[in-house]
Image (cartoon, rainbow over all chains, first blue to last red; front, side, top):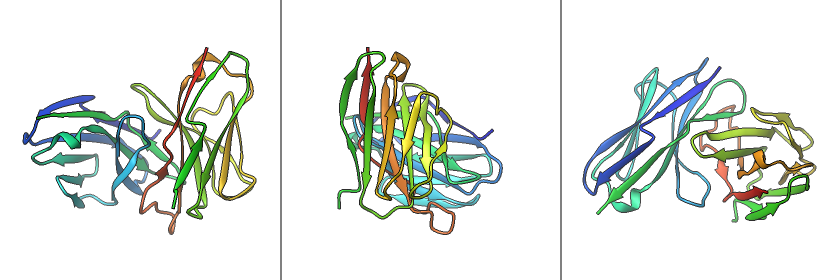
Length: 109
Length: 116
């Protein structure tokens, strides 16, 4: 069974304090790993897709990396507007994504 | 370009009542999905469709039915609502692109349903 586990469940950072979110997965034949951002009361918003171990993608203060067992979302010098829930999902067989429970990030100024 | 639109945004039902949630997308996406999101459990797939006239069960299909009569619309029905169906429901759509979701899913803004 495909599984996605995200840690920590919640993370509080001071503005400018860099950190990383973890997404570990067990799937049969990874076809893609996805990161989403979700603001309160809204639907998830697509951030990145990673396909193979060693791949990295960046967007502003966010950088996503992928190994054979996990992915990291690195946040460099975060700002209060980076506060959100970050979701990780994997595509294995078929046409469906399996999501983790998410990490709630709070950045205080 | 509206993307994915869900109606209604909020609803309160009494146990045993029925309702239909509507999802409409204007991106000509082939695939559409219904998820529910509960605290600490992430997004769980209820039903999905890979094209007009097709539907399939996801991870938690019991108590729900769906229909995809038109490519742009995907309806989720609750025939007899139960308190366990209190949740936030999200619709999503995607274009498969050679079997890969290069741009992920596009999600609607959600429907918050409370069953009392």
